[in-house]
Structures are given as structure tokens and as C-alpha cells.
Image 1 (spheres, one colour):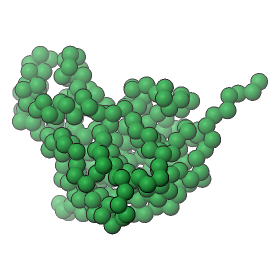
Image 2 (cartoon, rainbow, N blue to C red; image 1 turned 90 degrees about the vertical axis):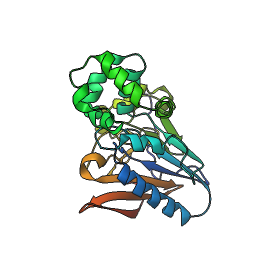
Image 3 (cartoon, rainbow, N blue to C red; image 1 turned 120 degrees about the horizontal axis):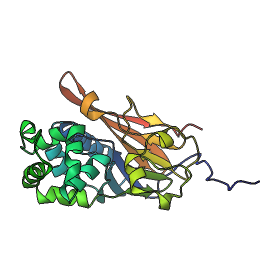
Image 4 (cartoon, helix red, strand yellow; image 1 turned 180 degrees about the vertical axis):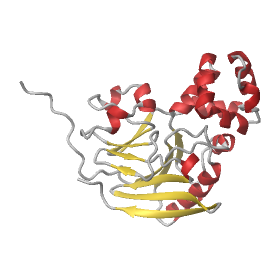
Length: 267
């Protein structure tokens, strides 16, 4: 019995003609790295031809690191120099937003997975929150987090298609059409996506799963280099068939940046 034919592998992926995108991996409260990375991205863009240029955050702006408040503030208004600024919803943003919009029972789980650091960045004492009821946690966080930051959370996107690439926080479910992907998979999937070598109909650029360096496969590129614990925040530049990686990293207490032009994806 013949099986339905799946997508063909993309041997040389390309972004759309005349457009450029920079996508940033999981920031997790490391505003110091984000600030340096944005400077390096703008410098890279200034050295290239003038075309429509898009900035994308792959999600997980908040939690774990010390300055979630400042990271969120950086995305309240579109970043200057870009055609548009786009933020995907990560699983950490999802849990906080749900906790603040009716599902207060989720707040303790959010706090236990990096949320205490986020709360501290907004001036809410972590020791005070521990052991409190969900209602008290909700009241404290709602009073501390500005409406403008809540608007950013509510305006996040599920995924973005960019030529042969797809930006998603966690990944996609293999075997499911791109327009049928569930929000849960886009924000949470790991094993079934990470272990698949199947053609997906696109090359997925994702965060969510920490690796020491950028992970390149024929069907995906992983950008979460663990900024909150490794001191390394990574972005990718895509312009038609060209790719480059731009990194901000901490060395002996100082933040440095670097750029690496890469060849095509492995066959």
C-alpha cells in the first residue's frame, strides 16, 4: 500500500527575496546580553544593503535571569531601525499570561520554573510570594507588572513563516501540516520534534531547548544557547540564501559580541 508522500527536503533554504530577518533565541531576563546583541545586530544591518529588515524574538523573554522587567520594556515599542518587531510566545510567557488572566492556579508552577526571578525584577519579593495563596500571588504580580508589558504578552505570535524558514518557539509536530500545528506544540514540543529527521516543509528556527552551541540539522536550527546560565545569547540573520550568527557573550564579567557567516545547511 502506497503511503502519502511527505514534504521534500529543502536543500538550500532561502528567505523571501529582498527581505532580511534577525531572530533572537531565548533571552530569559538577560537584558545585558540583549542590549549588546541588539547593538551588534544593528551594526550588521548597517553594513548590508538597505532592504526591509525584521526583528524576531523566539520567546522566553522572561524568567530565570535577573532583568525580565527590562527585557519586556525593550519590546514595549518596536525597536528602531527595523521594518517590524515581532515576539513569539514562549512557554514561560504562556504560563504567566494564563496565570494573570484567570488561571491563578498556574502561578505557583510558573514561579517554581523561573518566575521568582521575574517577580523580583518587578520589585515583588520572592520570599513574600512563597507559600502565599494563588489570589495573593495574583494581586502582587498584577499590581507590579505594567499594563504595557501585559499588552506585549497578549500581542505575541504563534509562529512566523519567512520564505523556506519557520520561526517557532519550541518547534512543530512532524507529520502535521504547518497550518494545522497546535499552539501547545509550537510552545512546548521537544522529543518528537528534536529527534525527527523528517522533511518538515520548511526549516524550523526555534529556541526552548538549551544546547551549548547552535544546533544545525537539515530540518531545523536551534538557537537557545542558555543565556541565563551560560552567558551566551545567540541570533541568526537570514537574507535570501545567506545566514550569519551574531552572539553576545560574557567573558570575565564583560559582554562581548561576535559574528559568524555560515555556509548552507548540511545535506
